[in-house]
Image 1 (cartoon, rainbow, N blue to C red):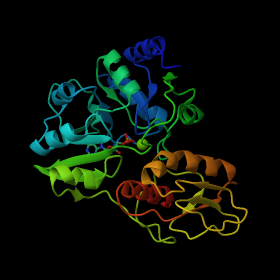
Image 2: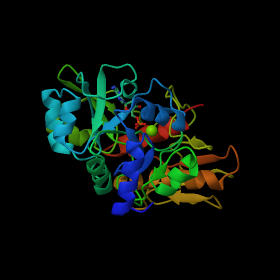
Image 3: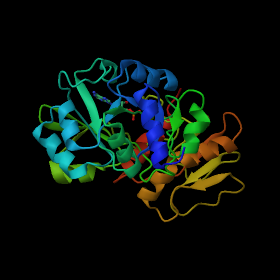
Image 4: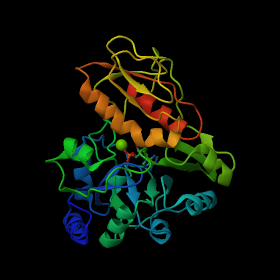
Length: 316
Ligand code: AMP
Ligand code: MG
């Protein structure tokens, strides 16, 4: 479905009827459902095979709508003003009687809320005129989708529609910011860097950051963002038979199937390419192939890139 007015109207019609519609945001494609409709939200969990204890992010078009759903601590409001609309999710105490289906919170007293920046996402939210629960539009545990094709490859037959808005501008999921009292806590690194958050909030405790796992010691991290292939991180060069995912100038890589996240070493460019390149290499490899991945610097968006790569490499 194209992003015409007619397409948007069709999407709204499907969503009002309790349907599932995937839509582009600047982070990744989301799988949207009416966040007030318990049955529609339950369908998200079924379509993705998502564990019921994993709460959803609710998307709204503006600050007024966000404040009807959550009780923002002072620093939450500061972060919201600085980064909304944008790739930041804020977790804060849920307001009673906000009308959000309980299963969005998966039993927690807090709710995760975001105002996305992608124009099509905002158009859809305004046209729908209500909150949309939307996790990434992929099978749970697999690589996140950054194009409408990625969504259709995995979810055709399980969802009611996709709005095609081309490739996602950021390419990594949102940063998730929570609070312990008024103390900001980073729950997941993502499209807004820790450095940018700290510039407006002061120190932020980083819980969710995973860096530079040793190549042969994948650590305790739970598997997520996982391709079919095995990942070998922080590699100097591909070994015989491995595929290669480079960052910056490539080493001699023989006949390896390869992709480069950013030849110039741009973390922003690497973020937009990560999930699409992982999918591409995965498809080119035989079952249980290995993708060797170049080191990514632990700064800026590199924190989120390393987090996703480490989870993608985790044992499963
Ligand atoms: P996804 O929609 O797949 O990007 O995942 C959303 C993530 O947001 C979940 O995996 C949780 O880790 C996080 N999240 C959502 N709601 C909450 C909450 N109330 N408290 C803490 N984390 C949350
Ligand atoms: Mg996801």
